[in-house]
Image 1 (cartoon, rainbow over the protein chains, first blue to last red):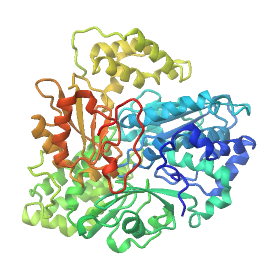
Image 2 (cartoon, one colour):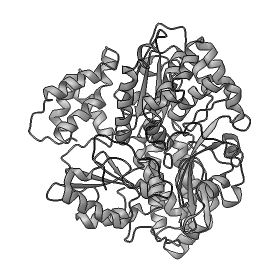
Image 3 (cartoon, chains in turn blue, yellow):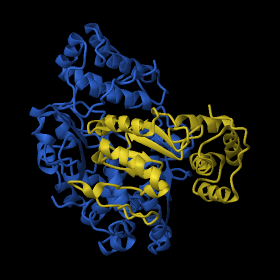
Image 4 (cartoon, one colour):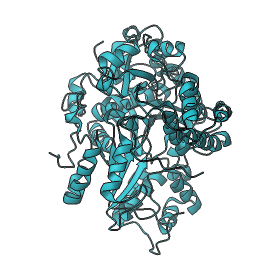
Amino acid sequence: MEPVLTRFVREPHAYTLGFYLKNEGYEGLRKALAMKPEQVIDIVKASGLKGRGGAGFPTGMKWQFVVKDTPKAKYIVCNADESEPGTFKDHLLMERNPHLLFEGCLIACHAIGAKVAYIYIRGEFFHVQEVMERQLEDAYRNGYVGKNVMGLGFDCDIHIHRGAGAYEAGEETALLESLEGKRAQPRLKPPFPASAGLYGSPTAVNNVETLCNVPVIMQKGAEWYAALGPEKNGGPKLYCVSGHVQKPGVYEASMKISLRELIYDAAGGIRDGRQLKAVIPGGSSVPILLPHQLDIEASFDGVAKAGSLLGSAGIIVLDDTTCMVWLAENLLRFYRHESCGKCTPCREGTQWVLNILEKIERGEGEMKDLALLENVAGLIAGKTLCAFGDAAATPALTTLKNFRAEYEAHVREGRCTVPAPWRRRHAAPVSAH
Amino acid sequence: MPVDDGKPFAYTSENRERLEVIAARYPGNPAGRRSAILPALYLVQRQLGYVSLSAIQHVAEVIGCTPADVEDVVSFYTMFYTRPVGKFVVQVCRTLPCALRGAERVTEDLMDALGVEPNGTDPSGTFTLMEVECLGACDRAPLVMVNDSWHECLAPEDAKTLVADLRARGEAALTGCHHQAPDRANPEPRTENQNREPRT
C-alpha cells in the first residue's frame, strides 16, 4: 500500500502550511463544510474508521452519540498523550504532519457542532508542541483556523494543552479531568463524555491518528478508504515496531499485512542474528504472542482472533535473550508508578505484584509465589474504573501462562536464568515496600 | 510536600501576562479558569526552576482556587519539581522498549559519570539524574531527555560523551529533538528546530 498519512513525512518541509496546501491540504475540510454535519458522520461511519488510540471504537458512532440537543458548548478533545509503552506514531504525525491533525480536528468539530478543539499533548513532547504551535499560528494567520474558516462562515478554535507527566491522562475521562486542571484520574461512567465530558459538556475524545484519517476519508471517499484494508478494518494503519529488531520505526500499511511481514520485512527481522522469543503486538498492556502466531492479519480483528489485541499497534519484539520474569517486573514497575491511586485493587495490587516479581527475579521466590502472583493479578483485572487495571494485570498473567517453566527455573535455581548482555551489570535496587 | 524555601514567589509581569493569554483559551468561568493550573505551574517552573510552597499559594490566588487544589495537582504529575533540581535534569527512560536496548546500562554509566544515584543532584547543583517511565520514543531507544530536549539512541558509551558535552558547552549542547537520528538505519526526518543551533 502507498503510504497515506505518512506519504510526505520524509520531505524536508512537509510540516509547513505551504507544503500542505500544495498537496491538497484543507481540501477535505472544504468538502466537509459543504455538507451537513450528519452527512459527514455518515461518511465516517461508512468508512469503518475505528479509533486508533487503543480501544478501536468506531469513530462515526462516537460522534453520533454526542448529544445534539443542548444549550451547552460542545467540544472535540484530541488525545495526544501518547504514553502506551511501545507506541510512538502520533509523535511522527504531529511533528511532520501537524496540519493534517488540525484539519481532522476542524472536520470533527463541524460534525458534532463544536466551536473549540483542545489538543492535549503529553508534556514530554515539548519539541513537538513547539513545531505545532508555530504551524497553528500560521494556520490562524492564513484563515484555516479561527473566525470564518476559509471564508466559508465556519468559526472554530484549536488550542494546544500541555500535560505534565501521567500515563493515566491517556484514559479519556482522566484526560478530561487533567484538562480541567485536576489530577488525571478516571471518572465513573456513565455519564459518558458524549453527554457530560469536558466542563460537563458533550464531548468527543479522539486519538491523533484517528483524526488524521478524517481529512483523507472526506477527500477520497468512504468506499476507497474501506477498501484499503480487510473487511471492517479499513484505511491505512501506522505500526510502531520496537525492541530487538534491526530497524525500529513507524511503518504505515494496510491492515491486511501480517505480523510476520511487519517484523521481518518492514523492520528487518531480529537484530544480531538472534531468535525471536515473543511479541507484544499492541502496546505493553496486551497479551503476548509466540513465534508460531505471526502469520496473522495485523488488524483489530486478526490480532483479537489470535488471543491478543492490536491496541495502539505498538509491536514490541523480544529476542531469546529476554527474561520473561524480568520483563513482567519491568512493566509492573511502570504500572505501579503510573497507577493513579483512585481504585484500591490497582493502587495496592500493582505494588504487591511488583513485590512478588522482584522476589522471584532476585532468586528468592518460592513455588507458592507463582499461585499468589496469579491470584493477586487476577484481583486487579476487571475490578477498576478504567482499563488500567486489566493492563496492569496482563504482564504477569501472560508471561506465567506462556513461560511458566522460566518462572519455575528462577525459583529452583535461586537466580535469574536468562542473563542478557544488555541488562544492568550490578544488582538491581530493591523497591520500597 | 513542596519545599518552603522562605522566598515569597510572584510572577514577573511578563509571565503574569503570558498566563492571562493562556487562560483566555478556556471558558471564562471558574471551571474554565482552573484549566490554566498546569500552564500556570509550568510558568512557575520556568521562572523559579521548581514549584515552592509560596508559588503554590501565588498560583491559587491568581487562578482563584485553594492552595490545596494546586498542591493536589503538583503532587500528581511527574514533571513538576517540588524542590530545587540541577541546571540539567537528565532523565533516562527505563520502560521496556528502552530497557531492551540497554537503558539500564545507560543509567549505570550516567551514575558513574555524574557521581550521583537516580533522584540525586550533584554537589555543584549542575546535574540531577532521574529514571522516568516511557517517553514515547521507543524507535530511538535508549532515550535520555535533558530538560526538554531529547537525546536518542544512546549507547552506554554515548552517555559519558553526553555528560562531557554538557559540562563543556552547557546549554548549547541541548539541541532539541533527533540528536542522533541521522545515524540510524531507518532515520526519521530531523525536526527543523529553528530555535536551536544544530549539533554536529
